[in-house]
Image (cartoon, rainbow, N blue to C red; front, side):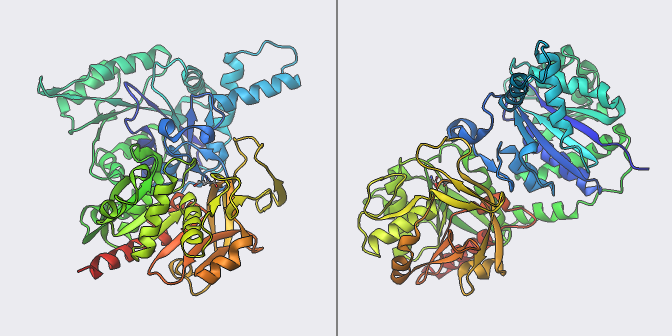
Length: 548
Ligand code: GLN
């Protein structure tokens, strides 16, 4: 007998950054390992309609899905840990909810009624949760923010109501909280958890499972104490212990029978879990045979969250080569003529990631020149690719003032420019934009096909002719300079099927020098590392072993 779709709601208490996104992703992985089909969803309390316009310093990376949605970085965890394919319905914000309710109100859909948080906003939230519940056994929905925040109250109220809507046997509440170890007292403290659960219960939600983030496994006594104060069974208190690698989280949960408990409470019969892949993966990550150092030359280096998918993809590239990848974050603003060599000397590979804005641009160009001239493997992603084109144009193809019009509108060599008209493959329509276009949602976003030229680094890495990768940018390679750059030794090894958009450039006379207009990091998986990252790390390893 098939069972109705089940819903797991994940909330967080005490403070943010406890790893709610990872915990949700790990639950997804465990349920998949038992043969269930799942999807995940993130409910964000902020008022921005999507995180696309938010500063990476504040919000971390913007994760892009195949369908071109700009989403919360937790969706990156979800995709890396599970087989769920996510899109714009898998992330919504207070802004998006209000936007659609207000649009309906203006249209007159509420027929003169007073539009209120309850029921109109909460109904809209529930409708959005329901929208992803098709064709899956379990929906895991994570509520952003912390219990007690004013902002997330409508979401909490909506998930509370959800239980009576779909039946109590179909809903499970998981609460992630903190159990800190206080060194001066020599013990862990349960009070923050008690308070957080009290808060949750005061709005009508009794958690079924508590995930307690802590640095050590909790003793039976501590678990019993938490269970007693929080009104849950002791086997529903799980230690969410700090781990060496994030890919260990599903295994730590499984050791404490979290997946057994979930399927039991939701009354689902499944096959026994198969976690051999995860065990092998963790072993590989923990026991690498070699190591390389990759310098990431960028602007947001102080905030690792800004390059989340990139860091993971590099780690995956290492997994594909049985090697550990040490990341050396280099602030591009500090790279000048004098410091460049010294700062990048220890790198076996140099990567310039995506970005926006002029700050640190010349430092990035200098780092690219250094890798080109010294034949150090170079990987340019989006802005990194664009700056590789600029560097090559300036210093090899003799177009001294070459630039992207993003940074110099009047350059006589606009090798990267704003394409005002282009064909959108997904909608099969011609799109137009100019500098006055809105900032939100006017980029080339999401998956686009790309044809690879045989006899190229890209083709050898992917080992196929047609690929699909995700984009998030406004500016493009200017075909007017294609010929001239090619003659100078920089060629397009990947282009859109109609040949109009250059998607990958490579340098002919270099062991590994590749720039791509898309963001390959969004599609890399620990179990299935991205071909370009595997190939780049291999080149970095070769470079390391060639050195005296
Ligand atoms: N700023 C560049 C553009 O908009 C690159 C964007 C990016 O690296 N994601 O085209």
